[in-house]
Length: 601
View 1 (cartoon, rainbow, N blue to C red):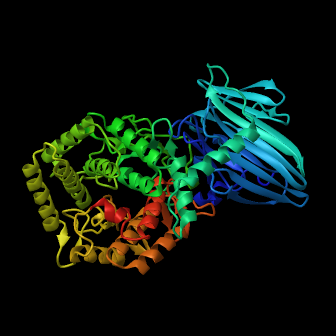
View 2: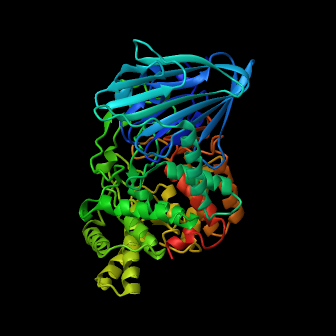
View 3: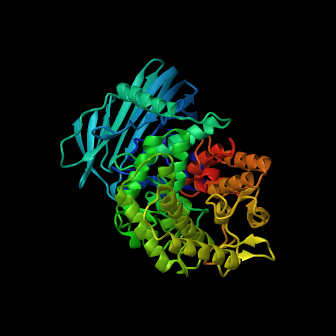
C-alpha cells in the first residue's frame, strides 16, 4: 500500500478533509484513510478514532498497494472529495462522500479507473466506543459483511470480495482499469433494528452533488472572496445537525491548541456564544432557513431556565455534557489527556445572556418573528442579570481558574439591556424601561472606569489584571462605543502592538494559569480585521483578512488556531467559529452595511 502504518507524529491537522451528511462527519487524510468518524451524531462515540490514537483505534484506508502519488480537491462547490491516485502503471480517482441522510447514514467510496491499471486495497478496522471496542463481523455474502458491537452495527457492501480477519479487520485488494469502477458503501444502523436498504452509489452521488449545488445557489455574496466564503458556508452547513438546527463548534474532540499540549477540549457541541455570529453570517449570505433553524434551536435549548442558561448544549439541546478522559487513547501527536464531554457546560459565563438576547434581536430585525414566550424569556434573563451582573465569571475563553469580572462579559450584559430597551421602545412593549436605562448607564460607566486605562489609552481584559485581550476588539461591533471613539481606536492600536504574531492575533498573553498562548486564534485575527475596518483602516484590514485566508489548508478549511512557529493549523477542525468569522469579515469588507456595523445599530 502507499503506506501501511504511517508515523502518527508526522501528521498535521491540515492533512485532513471533511465529508458529512449534515448529522455527522468523517475526517479523511491525504492518503485516503478515514481516521475520525462518529455515529450516528457528531457527538456520538467514534468508531474510527485513529486521529486521537493509533491504527488500533479504528480507520478505513483506501489506497494504492504500491508507490504512488495523490492529489485532492472538492468537486466544485460541494462536500464531495475527489482524490487522484497515480502509480507507475496508471491512475484512478477516488470519490468520497456522505449522502445527505435518508433512512441511514452512509459513507460511500467510489474508485474509477482513468488510465492503465491501478492496484488498491480497502482496509477497514472498526473500533467502537472511541477506538476501544472491537466488533464481531458477520458475513452476509462474499461482498457484504456486518460489524456489530452492542447497539452499534455497520454494514460494508462492495462489488469486490471482502476478507474479514480474526483481529477485527476487513481487508481486500483489487485492481481497477481505465473505464472500470469499484464501489464501497459503509452504512450505520442500530444492531437490533431492521437493516436499512442498500444505497445506489451512482444515484446517491448525483443527489449529493445536486443537493450542494442547489444549496450554494442560494448564496447572495458576490464579492471578491466568493470562493472562500462559499467554502466556509458549506463547512458551516456540514457542521449543522439537520434534525435540530444546532451547529457543532467543530467535528472533532481533543485536537490540541499546540503540539503535545494539554488544552484538548471536546468541541462537538453548540456554543451559545456563537449565536449572533451564526445568525449574521447566514442572514447576510442568503440563508434565512438556516438562520431560523438555529434561532429555533436556541430557544429550545435555553427553554424556561432564565437563571440557568448554560454556555454550551448538546446537538439536540441536551444540558448535561459531563467531561471525562479516555486513557486508552494516546492523543494527537501525544497531546493528552484526550477528553470527551466539556465541563464548561457548568461554568458561570455572563456574556452568553447578551449573546442570546442580541441574536434574537438580530433575527427580529431581519423579519424573523418569535413568540410572546420568547419575549418573556428575555425579560426573565434580564431580571436575573439585574441580580448577578457584578459577579465574576469564567469569561469568553472559559478560564478554569479563579473567575473574574471580565470586560467583555460586562459589555455583553450592557448589550442585553440595550437590545431589550430599544426593542421595548420601538414596539411600545411593557417593560421597566427607566430601571433598565439606569442599570445600562451604570454598567457602561463602571466598565469605562474600571476597565479603561487612560495612561495606556486602552481597555483591558478584566477589572483587575491590566492584561489585553482580543475580545475587546468586539466592543465597537456590539455598539458599546462608536468606532471613532478615541478609547476604541487606542484599544485596537494597543492590541496591534502587543497581541500580534506575524500579522495575526493571539487571544491574550497568558491565561489564568500563567500559560502563554502558543498559537494565534483565527477568529481573533478576523475580529482584528473587522476592528481595523471600523476605525477606517481598510488596507490594513484587507491585508489581515488575506493573511487568515492563507492559513487555510489546500481544501479551504480552517482549524481553531495557527502556530506561527511550526506553520501548522492547530485545534479542533474544521472550526465553525473560524469559518463564521471569515464569512462575516468578507461581508464587512463590502461596505458600511455589513454585520459589524449593523449589529450594534
